[in-house]
Each structure stands twice: as C-alpha cells, then as structure tokens.
Length: 276
Length: 162
Image 1 (cartoon, rainbow over the protein chains, first blue to last red):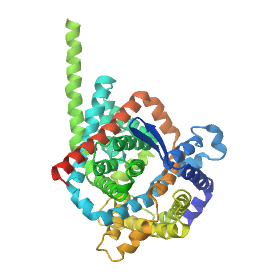
Image 2 (cartoon, chains in turn purple, green):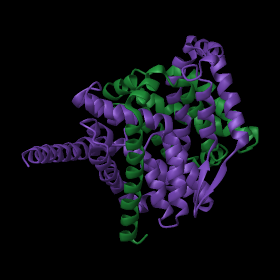
Image 3 (cartoon, chains in turn cyan, red):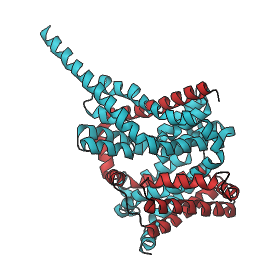
Image 4 (cartoon, rainbow over the protein chains, first blue to last red):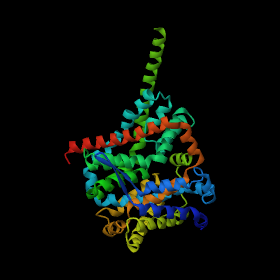
C-alpha cells in the first residue's frame, strides 16, 4: 500500500491534472480553417500547454504549487497514464479483425515508408543546414525510445549521433502531438489518400502522437472512426515488433552510408576549390 | 526520463504489479472524469467501461512480468485488448460494448497533462542547446515518416484493389 500512499501524497499533481484536463475537455475540439484543409486543436494539446505553463521549470513562480517532487513523479506517470489508452485501442482492433487482415500487406509494408524521413530530413540536415554527424542520429528514425536505444547502444547518447537523436526525441516529446495533429488534418482534408492509409501511418510514433493523429483523422472523417482506430492501433503494435529491426538493419546503415559518401564528396569538393 | 526509457528497453523491467495496480486506479479515475466532462458519456456507462479497460491493462502488465519472453508492456496490453474483443472470444460482445463507453481521446488528455508537468530542466537545456536547426530537422523527420508511411500504404492498398 506504500505506492498508494505515495500517490496520495502527490495529490497536488493529480488534482492539477484533473482540473487542467477538465478545462481542456470543456474547451473541446476547435477547427482552424486553412485553405482547402483545416488544423485541428485537440483537448490533449491544451492539457499539455496548460500543464507546461504550470511547470516550475518553465514558469518558476508556479514552484510553490507544483514542486520538483511532482515534476519527478510526473514522468513515470506518463507511461502509466498511456496504458489504459493503449488497452482501449486494443479493444478497437479485435472487432475489426477482418479489416486488419484485409489490409495486412499494407500494414506490414508501410513500416518501410518510415524511411521517408531519410528522403526528406537527411538532405535538409546535411546539405541545407550543414550539420555534422548529428544528422545521422537525427534523421534515421522518428526518434522514439526504441530508436534512442539503438543509438545509445551503437554510439552512446553523448556522441554527436546521440545529440542528434536526443534533439529530435525532445522536440518530439514537446511538440510531437501538435505536429501530428496538424499533419493528419492537412493530409485528410487534402482528399488525396485512402483514409485507411492515413490511419495506418498514425501508428508510427508514440502513444500520444497516435492519439493526436487519430483524433484529428476521426474528426475529419467521422464515418470511418472505428476503422481508423483499429488500423492505427494495429500499425502501432506492429511498429513495436518491426520498427526496431527496420531502424537497426535498414535505416541506420543507409543513413550512415549516405553520410559517409556525401561527406567524403564534400571534402573532395572543398579540396578541389582550394586547388583552383 | 530518456535514460530510464533506454534502460527499460535493454533489460526486462521488474514490474511491481501491486504498485501498478494501485496507481492505475488513480489514473483510471482521472480518465473517467475526462470521459464524463468532455464526450459527456453517462458516468455509470463510463465507469463500467473503465473497469473493463482497467482489467485488460492489469492482465497485460501481468504478462509483461511473467510471460516466458519479453515484450514491452504496451505491446502486451494491446494484445490482451485485441484477444478479449475478437469475435470468437467468449463474452467479447459484452467487452466491446463496455469499452465503447470509453472515449480514446479523453484517455489521452491526462497523459499529456502529466507530460506537461514532467518537462525537466535537462530537457529544456537540450531543446535550447540543440536549437532551431534540430527543431526544423525534427519537423521534416515527422513529415517524412508520416508521408512515407501514407504513400507505401496507399500504394499497397491500390495494388491489392481493396
């Protein structure tokens, strides 16, 4: 029962979460029209912002209400709070098992689409922003925990590659939900893609990213809510199974080779310039 | 947060089931408040739904702890939720009906609130230090990964003609 008493001693934190969460739920989902599409603001985003504003590390004057003790306790609670959410997602997959099987090949292979990060982000990082080996860690994956583990294992997190993956990890932790809610609402309102494909792609990140992504999708396409939840949940589960290996055996070696090849060329080019 | 996350990946964590069971009660109660305030689902319905979700989570955690091979707890919890709701599982209709009274976005709201409170000095330092370049790259990482996944899934669905 010590754990329970421990949690009760954190009543300030839990009460703050209830109050903030309730306010966020009361505000509800807001739509901002943007050209042909729309950006969706979800309660989970307001909840995050309000909590961050009350975080003593960001706004010190709240240190009297939320202390460092609560800040430290909040971190493991994220994982626990996401568990019932994942369970709920599981219950949407079972009844839709036929849909999942039908979409099976697409579900399995869309993991390869994660390599899209290399196509888009790697050139920007290396050629656009002239980043060094940070680019390898930053662009090989979406930088969730399993990917952090891969980099920690191979280069340690204190290396340049480690800085890269940590940077994207932190940005993802802070703003991932926003970016995914915006991406999903823009892609969905563009009317170019099968909603099932959009749903599967929602599963590529963390639980909260999936929440924001599917939340936005189901708002734009309410008629397919059940299917969207089931496919996103199945994709997220598969990401645990296959994502680690795709990152380790495909994405990281590709990024490394690309970097070595182009960095070599760059050195050659600067050397030639000097001669000329 | 990040370092402990890495540690749980590389070694099987010893989950204290009693600790988790008790903490989950609080988390589920918080979620129930959201479920009642936001989507306005009647409290009695939401309560039964949350009880079902609670037990699915607990079974998943027990499997994480005792199963002969290691999977992350989220994967186990997900699997238990799936198996419990498959059409050929006895009683699945009842479980599906209860779980429908729990709104998935309402469960995500408290998780993100905890995340907002959990931002540590170290993470602010990393964000400041790594600066705008990494932030820009991160946006392209997300866009590239999402778009890539959508395109591959779209292509396969079209090839299948389903």
